[in-house]
Length: 133
Image 1 (tube, rainbow, N blue to C red):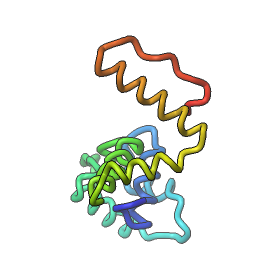
Image 2: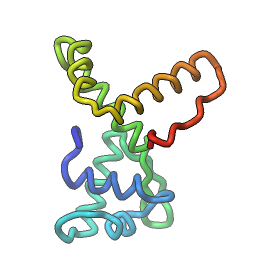
Image 3: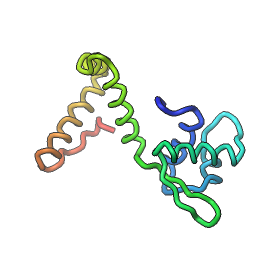
């Protein structure tokens, strides 16, 4: 994941999968990571993610409880936008990106365009296509 280290990404993914806020102990237990980590390591990195603005937190007893500030999809879209704006020609970059789409991806893209258009015009939402996940 661009912008996140391996451990940061593991913590964020554990929180994105969670059904609600988690204390560090539960984040550590729910992480998918290739080695065992100390509680204090997870606590330190969760604090860093909070300082970066990626996590919200609240004191619950003696422990902090954390939750993502944005959904995984929102985060990914924001990072994609940042990457797109870093190139010298965002239009050419976007064209090259879309040229790599499969036919199924193109169907999804057209569906997304309809959803955005409907939201902007206040129209009723388009029916979700079974091909769009």
